[in-house]
View: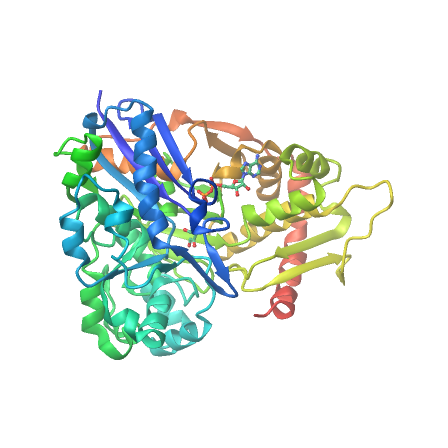
Length: 525
Ligand code: ADP
Ligand code: XUL
């Protein structure tokens, strides 16, 4: 039996899965939840928020890697049987390695934990992550530097977004020149994790590299004008050196570092395959067909599918594909995903998903003309901040309720989240024939039913959880064995649409779009 290992360095946790290559199924797994397992970093939801600035302690991710491996070992996994490893990270987050850290990585002692040895390896201890929206100024400047938002989208697959790594680097290069000048190398969360495993700097893979506003997605090289803008006073050459050259997502980077061989019993021949972003990795975990759209309901909600030709627009993103060097993936991203649903659950259902579901089920589809927008944090799609409720097109502070009625917010948040996905997906040319749903909220039958009705298509699911980490393990296997492919039978029907409800949601789309435009004005930030 050959096995591979996949990691997911996500927003709230690090997950590791062990996959049996013959069946592509997960045979062991472990998780380290940042807030609960590593409370000394004082994160909430895996990060630290200070106004629009959102970061995670880089060292927390380092410590989590040792801890998750210890848990896998304790489960009795024979690490020497693992042939290859890959994985993914939350997209856009960046790590700033300090001068001299390459040497540190090459000489890690197996006798001391990573946390102790890498404590002084970073030029800044705080990694900006995808929830950051503090770089509006840089967004305006970078679009101007590349000849406007359309041109930037044509080249890099996306117009400027606050969370994209180029904007984050530009901010540090200009506003914290001391941090930037003592930085030897910049990694994404994905390539940072791979760097520790190989004991040296790992290249940024092209799929995750597409989330930086720096990569030309057609030539798959860094764009010189964008390096010039993002590199600040030190210029483009210095930034190119810090980024290294981008690598194909399916590249074998090398063998695992001695640290892991001696501390955990890995085979010294175990190969490390380039890590990628969590969304590309999820895409790689499913045997999708033409017309399949994946909806991931995790900390963020995302919607994506494979494309043969890039069609960049001002809405959404186009990334290089994580498996096929000639293909692309299109994606939408929502910041107010699970955490916003949790807030509504806590307010109206005492923190219970069962109670939340029964409140949702008590109302008819469409909430009788009520539409709510719940952007507790500054939203990405669309760019707006605040909570806005409309009754028969009129803005109201709260939905009016008869004394016998249960609250509308639980159903209203699901409907507006999914109407937004449908509306923006259509705007970038994604019209699904089927949806494959994944992520923490995908086990919730009520949520999945509303999703199916809003899109008017069947929703499929796999029994395998942790699809981003599993995608890492599968990519690790496929990089060594190009014959390996995914089995369509692993997808099971989870919901079919009710035509009456789907027709009603189709009829609501225009109205939804009008209200969303109004909310973008009301909720400017
Ligand atoms: P990550 O983005 O960190 O990988 P996950 O995909 O594991 O996160 O999703 C975590 C989220 O899943 C939690 O924030 C939680 O709100 C949500 N979740 C878990 N179980 C349910 C459920 N039964 N119904 C709705 N949401 C759920
Ligand atoms: C994608 C995005 C998020 C993160 C965290 O563009 O910002 O989905 O990858 O999951």
